[in-house]
Length: 395
Image (cartoon, rainbow, N blue to C red; front, side, top):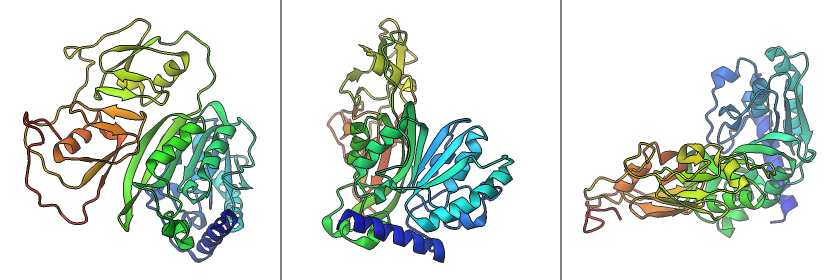
């Protein structure tokens, strides 16, 4: 299906939804009771998304925020409140009906927030050709929109272009656990349902890395739909556009605390738990960001850890038989590869079948933030408990 045909069909679908009040595709968890205090009902009733990227404590006062696919403006208006009157918010959308609603309500929202004038503007444009100047945006947000773009890698490059050095993104989107087949890719109706254009998590995060973002990691995830054996799920991701640096003032060594026994970062550097690793200036800057900082000891001189050190972190499975229940784990950053203490090797975005004991490990505080968990069983599993290894180890 030609790209311009996809874009027109998606735009027409959302324009009809704005007029009819049709509920569109994705699971959303807005706090409507809060938003109703300053956002008009006309905006709230046409708000579609699969996350709340503006409401996850990612927006700071005085920043410039860009919302890709701003629709009726709900996320822009929440960002407007959070950046304050000295901040600036830009919404981009390709649908005239949505832009008309958003612009009409911008003055109302500014008044409700007590601002002398709106700090939000809405521009017509496409995600892969954004009408925004280079290097001017502190934070990019998007809510279940990039999967609608036919050329997502071009969108990712545009995001990198407009982000300031030191800028970041927090985006919610729908991804799939396996490549979407052609019969769905060419189904125009399912493009509007956030299905046909979904990338795998692996390809989504790799595209962001190729565009120049670093430290890409999961904020939250939730299952959505299963169609013909393909699992579609919502993820909210964050990543950074690191500034150029030649400074040697930062930490010179990093020692992995755990709970992973080994990790590989996006530059291909391997870190092993307890063993200090020399850092480049760029790596030192990246590891100072969340969520890396809590996983490492950063220091000027090499620091070696062992199991007696309180900073050492490990989570071992119970030494009991396990059960296979159809669970799969997807590493969702900030590493491209990671290993646990039972020698499972997780590669970013790739589903790995896990037993009940490993699931329990991955649900602990140290591991849970870094994984999306899916269950592929079509009905309850009644398998018997089994020993994964003669020693009682797992899998």
